[in-house]
Length: 353
Image (cartoon, rainbow, N blue to C red; front, side, top):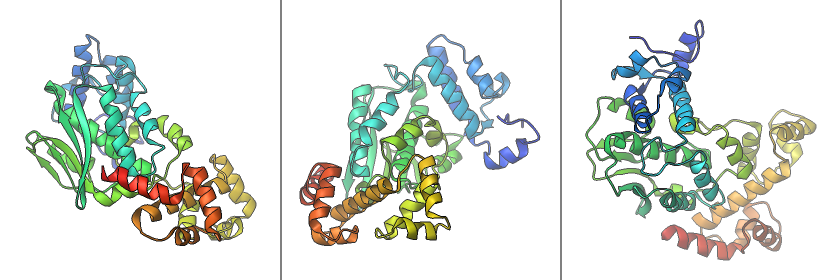
């Protein structure tokens, strides 16, 4: 069976090992149907993804994640629709980026997902997204308001895959799922769902949903506006490939500071086998400053302790490397606009809702 590749020989075999052809042609055919709905030809997009017309017509074939990324990018641009024909209303290029921007300032993943669900309802009327928590499990569900037709599977899979990818990126951790459920019979390509959704997958459910351990809702975000801007420049891999944690120097510095907030530039450089000068220079090249990272880690650690524990504010301050709870409170007000005690009350109340 011929499987096209984005990379020419002699790199094709190496590329196939790194990016195996797993994406079912049914998803390609769904994008082609979106073109048909608009009376447009998908030929240029297929060519960019190096998918031949014969291969596209063969439902038994599969393509690589790289090919599907190229196809999706071209289709979204040509159709000016990030929904790829799923909804009655087009979603112009940048719509999902707007959702991400509306969520990035959230203190925790739970708040970010709740905002994503709420603002998604402002974009489309065809379905609603809800986030609920009961006991140790949280559920992000899709409520279909109208019939989604022939693009239903592609729509529901893409929506949940996108949310899972963004959520993993927000906390910089592959988000383990307690389950993924879909309201249709298992398709011929059901095996790919185990790759798309890391957890038990069930079909024939009442509605599409992701189930995740509820403790994730209180995890603080590991990203900021600058990181979001960089991500949006190459956002599609989050949707079409499994999330992998970044391993940049800034992330390594964050990990060391998370383990011990008392680290100085000198002790960090020693741990990283760098000179202090090289540490500052390499962080600058990545668009970061050491003090900025220290403040972010302290903020995240403080938020996590305030949400997950009942420690007094003075002990939270000490755990974050502050010698005085007054200086900690001053810094926390700069970060969030409120005192640590008030933040704890407000954030726990919002997650409970």
